[in-house]
Image (cartoon, rainbow, N blue to C red; front, side, top):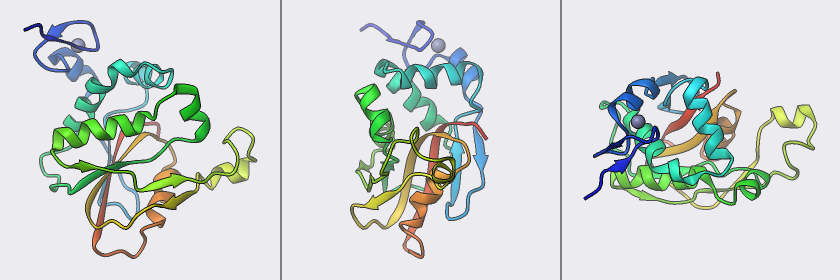
Length: 190
Ligand SMILES: [Zn+2]
């Protein structure tokens, strides 16, 4: 059997070599109302930023390694999750890449956690982020709920900046005592 190639090109028996894990894994916890916890793999800078941009430019070959990294950034004290979901990208982002990176990451993370993964919302933004006014953009994206959920849900997102996207997502399930949300992001640009 050949080993699996890491992000750096080194061959090892895991998706990430020890050196890359040491360099990239700098987990950050962010406080956001409505969430049990929000976790990011590291700061949006240096090599992690390069990897995020590489993924956004369409290189999906790094998805398994990034998923492994995100999975590793979840602390042992995290609860058992019942399911994994993701924040869908804007139509424009999806069209540019040809795939939904957060969906692919969520599916891999669900496999690692051995739980199911499903879509919970649809984006309903009227216009692209680009053409919207600054005021509208600050309000964040808009979503439509596709199904009811309960239990402990892990929400995968790409880069957290102001937290407005996760906040908008959470508002759809507001007041639901039987639902516990935890977010897991690739990086934090906070
Ligand atoms: Zn490596």
